[in-house]
Image (cartoon, rainbow, N blue to C red; front, side, top):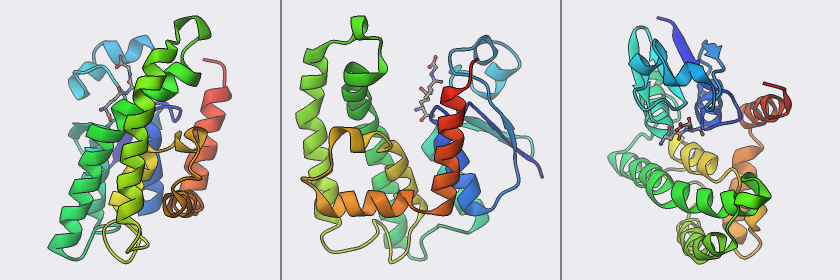
Length: 208
Ligand SMILES: N[C@@H](CCC(=O)N[C@@H](CS)C(=O)NCC(=O)O)C(=O)O
């Protein structure tokens, strides 16, 4: 059963490329750019009608939403998946936290401090996001007060999903949250993370 991952590494596809490497999966990579015409037209829209990346097709089964894809891949592989129902609960909690609480807030802060062209940045939107981001980072710091990893004793897909959503967090500065800073560094020191980051940086630097 072949797995295809769609999306340039310099996008949320980075999350799924990191997960696939962690899980030791063989895959084909189709690096469609999120701003390119391919993702807004057939046949891609049949895979992801949102016209966004990433998406996968796994043996004919199409899926989109980066963090849900990662849950699916880990659950199917039986790796990075918690052994207990409580661990599963934490994986779901932190994955939905990443999607609902981190993605919009860090996106707003990073977009209006670094990502958007300077003339499109609105400092007031970055300032609005900053205290929300601090609150959320504090919540993660609290969770890490009593445990090394978020869901179980080992790194799970829950750690990967939240760490991947926090890719830009070092730019915000993590010194006020030492346990989070250490956890983030441990997540990104994993060989699969390093390889995925290198792929992401190479694709960001490459001409389109
Ligand atoms: N919630 C989705 C968001 C996907 C998303 O917005 N991807 C961006 C690239 S990081 C994209 O393709 N944007 C193009 C567009 O939405 O038109 C996920 O996590 O997969």
